[in-house]
Length: 345
Ligand code: MRU
Image (cartoon, rainbow, N blue to C red; front, side, top):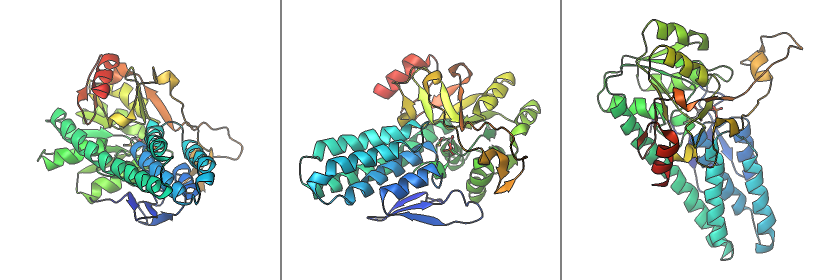
């Protein structure tokens, strides 16, 4: 794997610090669940599947500190609550914690050391499953996008946003592996956190995939110039009706794609689909600090006192989505019925 995002080293969790990329490749070590929660909150690690797997490992670190059965119950509740409160939009976080809770419930009455071992196994299984899912959806997506030589993507849905390989970038990687001639991948810079400029461009350039970085306000221009054959993005949560929450700006890309007759694909594992959430209107949208808007790379660019808005995600209506590429199948409309069939099947 070209990029190691998350590494479990028996009792320590290593995370590449994504805030410092591409300038520095440094790893942060988390030895307790509070450090894990802090790493998710401050976006040392980000991307829906990556924060799910990281939170699962946070539960393992939390459990390892428990010394007695008496202390276990309140300690574990604190661990689950703290990790769940880190970021609200990506459902993978809650999905991963629910799976860890299930393992916890199954083994809480048995031997404490066995419980810790089972939790570690569950987290490591999630890590492996995520990579397998990404490879599968990558290959399904590569089939779907066959013939598309010029692709546009938004934010970072790559190896950095997952346990490895990536979702939207997994599709592009699989295309390359299958010998497809990729002419150009347009990468939106993705203000304010610059996941596109800093992370996606870094991942693609590392693999010699032809990459063209554009600022967010250039998306319309490249589509109008007929330079984009398909858009592929990741997702933080897909509602039961197919509405997609993803990085702020994704909705803009989808509207432009519709206007220009460009297919708009979403690539995500089924762990990102939330069948309990009826529509995008029910997805909680994280609001982040105003500093991300008033500053770039630590330098203030706006006057003091100016009012700001910083929603980290937006919702794209399912009517704008050409297909949702999951590891189980490529899902098309009607999403309500087809997503349920694929996810429950
Ligand atoms: O705020 P971020 O960087 O965590 O947002 C990430 C995204 O919006 C990604 O597109 C999404 O999580 C999919 S990652 C495979």
